[in-house]
Image (cartoon, rainbow, N blue to C red; front, top):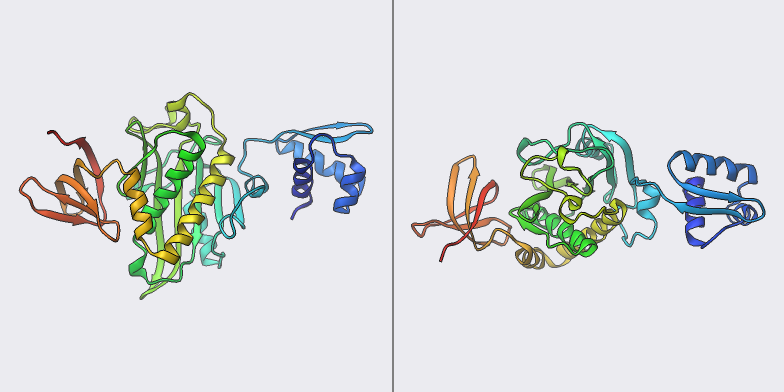
Length: 324
């Protein structure tokens, strides 16, 4: 671990002031070296007080997704144990792809403070203003057949939905397959990409974008942010940790128990099932009641004529309550 990270962790673990002598002794760093790292940390946005004969006191941390901040207190065994953080990326998906091709390990997290070409589903662009949202990609290397991977998309939505609900108490819902809605407006999107040979999965990259404190001026009309809906500013760091922890829980559960538990939880948060929907895909449009999802996460729709159809992909362009 970098010495600056060690100093921050020492200050966090000790309430009040910590003497330079104690830090020097614990981390085997000279007093001059400590002062050099303190200056670097201040330049990164940390507020650290220094007083003669008392030492150093950490007052505030910057609103940045620094690896050391994410990993401090993080309760995961795999996800987020290696983190690549950049100020700006074309997209975290593109950066993660490059890392995958170089052999990046499972659980690697790629996050950026902003993106110039953030990727959404179906070729859309994801608005990514600096320091306002969470823009992240997770690298997974599951040892399972390609045919079993379809529910990972829904798993990702469940994990993010539960993380946001646990941290904010906001009643976030999932629009099939994996958009997160708050008050019927989109707050998060998920993009799953993979590379496979025959039936061997080489890697999966799960990209997630969450509008945390994003101002309305950056968002399309149908989108919103947690701050816009709650009038409260939220900690991106706390949300990031919660996402990683819930994701690891459901990913481990999926690998050990299959898709059924994930799909049951997805149904609990669904805004789509039981609604009159219009779905658009490469085959055209389908209208009818979304009655359920199948064992792979495909949407089952019953049309007005009683015909039941299933779609594994597509875009829900309209949802409405069924008139009774």
